[in-house]
Length: 311
Image 1 (cartoon, rainbow, N blue to C red):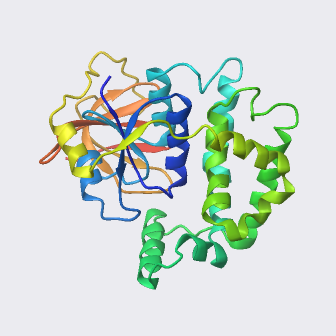
Image 2: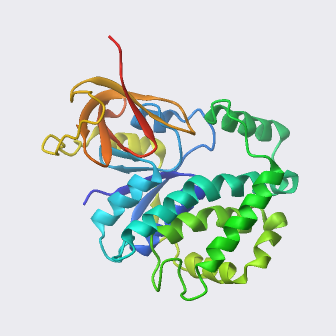
């Protein structure tokens, strides 16, 4: 198996989700630290536009979005499973709810003034303003949830998660699933990155105990790699052959078409390329880059918009 290269930065909540999954599956990986904000020239050479964190690279194959990355890691290391029967479907539903609903409420709460002071302690004001502007651009002009709405929503979500822990140590049973890793990372940010506002967790002691169990999993064995080295890895590799994958045409767009793939709600930079695969769960674009060579960029279907480029 080619080396697993994770492009991330330490304070990224979604990256923490994948770091823990790598640890849970005892997979060795290479750590490439990327900037928190644009520009990200080495990452962009690999993805062609997608800029959300994290990104998983295996040779010349680039995997975007943590839902897809988790599926890739599951295939590489099926045991222990992130999607055990009989809760495989339910665990995915809870994970999607956590990523799409718990996360934005948690961030609205975490980034109140004292939380911002925690995150950017000692940083110049210009750094804070650059981060704010970058995240506003990622939202595409959509407003942030207010602090009041974020607080009340987050409290409700914490109570629901706590209720899931009354009979067993993890959200879906006796072992962690994708639901646990997805629900953990917004709460991790509250506890680890914005400790001045972490008192919101005190009302749910079962959750705090569960968080300690998830944290103890750790990040596994990893070594540092520079971002330009990762680009060189892609240049010297060949993407996996996707020509035999079953074609699922939900868009009326033929394979070989010039297309773009864009996230549907956050991080709206489009990735252009040639559509070389479209299965029931993922889309794959072939890209040519001066530095990275020929790469395949893979996206999950859920959460992303496929469009044909007009000639």
